[in-house]
Image 1 (cartoon, rainbow, N blue to C red):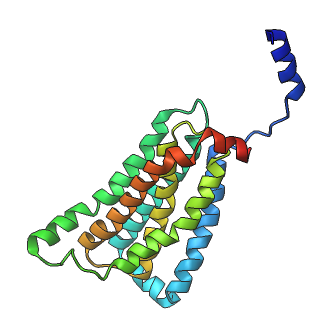
Image 2 (cartoon, helix red, strand yellow):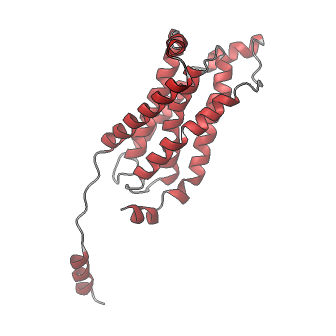
Length: 218
């Protein structure tokens, strides 16, 4: 088969392709549905009076805002990462925001550790771990489905971000429904749970986000 035959076949078999919406629009669409999902979950798990009381502290609110910002940055970076030609610098946003979020827990953790004010080995935080793991599962699957319409250029990083975004929001629900006075407990239990989920997702990324899966979805 010569070059002219190849070009003729390509021209004959070509099909129109609808371009994907802009990454930040897709991220906003996912975030809207996910926030509604977690909002309903928080209302189901916590009476409305307790929701107000649990979110009353300024320090508590700042921590949750930091987690939400990290989730938004991760969602945006995930959708940008499947667009060919996008700047890799966008990946710095979730790294920086997660650093601020978890880093804000470190000073309180050090103080508690030095004073022996709390036992970090407490088993009472398994409900929060389950909330973060199970609560983030459905939104993670939804984002992964959306990401498969893009190009799997960095599958490990992309899937890690697709898990980080809902895990950060699930952490907020866990904190609101079951608040902790201890910063150390939040860092050890919540932070480690989120990081383990992200690490597992990164390990599976190359087998889930593939060019073969792109052709099936497209």
